[in-house]
Length: 442
Image (cartoon, rainbow, N blue to C red):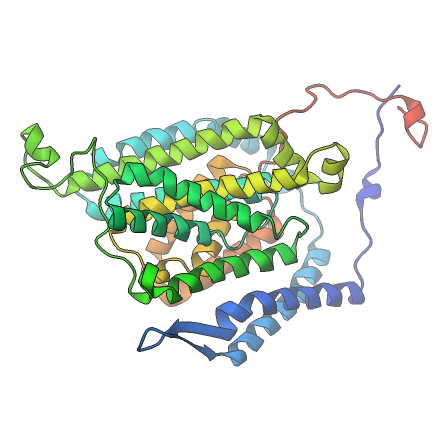
């Protein structure tokens, strides 16, 4: 018995014809039309009396669709001209081995540095605020990574769960006077329930249809928040949201504050450091739970669903339960992050939960590598920190990141640290009987 081998020419596909290129460009333009219709074509905003008004921008919409159509043709032609390029041709083998060895120390080094950030930059409030923001998006990215990276389900409405968690905590805390630690699990559970509600309509959907439905779900939640003024406050939002406490002791300058009880001078930075370690603990908890779930049967079911849904059903896996658990788990972490966002800001409004937030979190997952926890963390640091570096060029920073995302999807579609290896696999290659091979070789 031998091994089945294939000549290099077996994997070369014939060049795509004009009809194929045009068909692909038309499909891309149609998807762009559907996605950009809500973001560009129709603009909604609050009117002077609080009602929802809208305006149309069909000229800009047509221009963007035309750019996508022409760009798809150019990209496909460039692909055929350049051909497949392997990593070994771009980076020498010794350099790749060096990067692989150094990569083992990246995660521990990042963790140690993150733990020391409040100590190193104690007197720099801007860096502490930026660190809290980065960790919030790291947590959101790890939550969405369950849905997109592990289960392979495209979710463009992830901001809806972020909003549900934030408003759940804000309403429970301001109405019933509950503390942050009591409302935190409740906000996650309520967001998870909405994740199950989203999962039912998309059980049979994949690809573009799934993207459209999840995008619509995110917009529906935002519009409900805007128009249900008696509950959510509408465009005015909710203010005076309580801050978290340490075992019931507030971090305030009063006599009952933590600083007074410890006999130290009150410093406003204390609360900022406390918030930093809270979101760090929540992010690490998200990472630990995700890694543990991936090694359990439900995690392997997510991976099987991602690779091939038909084969997943053939193996007897209940795809309905698998999809619902993926959406519910991702929504749970999104709700936790939303509750933290509400207590950190002290004020929330619908403007904080637009589609741009969903797109940013999805970009972090895709850029870092779907399924890679370390890649998502590095991508969040790059994206959020990059936005701050380009703050002076606000008109062009989204254009720069958009171009970077397109180039990344073309030349490295699995992200910077793409990871799709299954949790269970054969450690040794096994030869098969020649009776099972069409060519008669084992």
